[in-house]
Image (cartoon, rainbow, N blue to C red; front, top):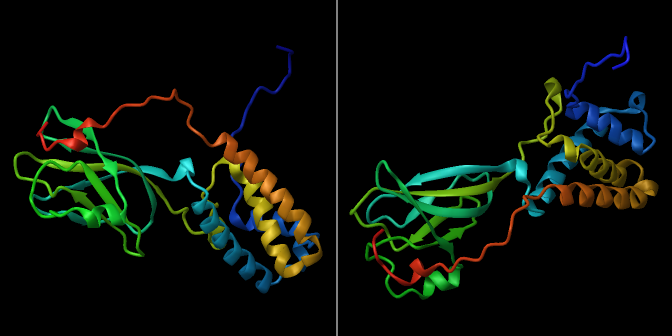
Length: 235
């Protein structure tokens, strides 16, 4: 190593939303000295709307977390955190230590409606996620009282609100920062620099697609038949 070389490293780049907004307007050729409260209000609104759009472009890996719901014997329907955007992998955890996990599968509204018996307790093998404003999850069959059960699932949640005051950072990882600025620049350009909106929209899509290609989990394809859904056997 060459003498005198500075070997220190930093990984602290995490701009506040205010800095992101200033940069986004800069891409619209609007300097920070020209920004008004109206500019800031429009940017905050568009940042949150963009995050809503991104929630529809799932899966946003940084928003995935593990949830658990203790199941009550005879009860099929349970409330789900309204911040949930979608449910990913799900399983039933049974018994006490040592606990055992068993995958369950999802079904749609019509399939659940077609079940002739929705009340007889048994071993839950499937669930219906009802994605309302106040969402719920319904397991089939309702759990019996043979052993304790917990519904476990990974979910993708909303991105935390974009807030301008107090130097709060947007809740996006480093790999998505350029996509965030690019998307916000396009959105505020529709208000304040419409002549540039077309070009900025193209850049925003390019930056998002690039980040999205990186935001994946790599694994081998494994296909396992879910034989348990055809039986009420207790595990």
